[in-house]
Length: 321
Image (tube, rainbow, N blue to C red):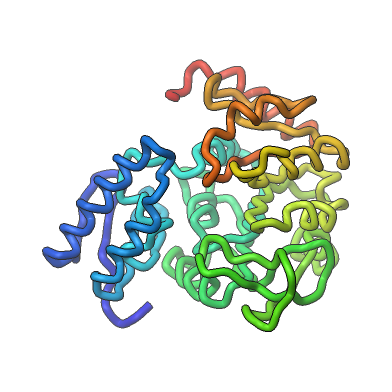
């Protein structure tokens, strides 16, 4: 963060404070752009917002997600500015699971945490004040992640690392902060980062083999390697949440979970608002409607967590779509 105090925005009340007239006008444009582009799965929104950002002073905005959660990012950021649109829901299938798990003593392993959105939320009181370890490889992202931990009382742990099949180092590359990756060929460009396997968190005493875990793997193309590196932790009471990219008609990550692991594969079906257990993948052809969007799938070997999914399905008709 620079020395300028951040703009403040309360998602509950819609109140925007600390913005000058130009920044207020930009907020209206960012909200309108989100509402219009939501009809097309927000295609083009990031690019337009990032163009607008060039005309704005370099400054952060701190968004009050709920009375106990503040999430800060650079004002005008194309990925996160959709949060200014109070009707926008970010990965609502994950929020369903996190909200339902508020009474469970679990730890979120937030892998590829970016600026820490889910770690901020899960550790807040409306989500049960659960524990979280936020793991992010990019040094620039990590600085913002650590700042969000500080803003929220350092109530979650932060680690700078990529997640892969084994401990080591890798080259991180990319131009978008939400899409940095260690996948692909290692070249001279990019940033050298440490790599951890999920099971190394057990080896290093960061987590207990007897704990309950929700594991978000937002690892941009190395999901299968990350799953391979978590064989032991995934034998216990754990759920992995992985991205299935809309531009992958082969459903590679889901196919691997279904055919090559002992995990049960689950996906949230927006048509029924239920979490469906999959024995084959054709439902993903219907769910994955936008090629530029990522869709979350879940994998678990835990009877405890499967029972929680079943319980959520029993109340699906009571939830607002």
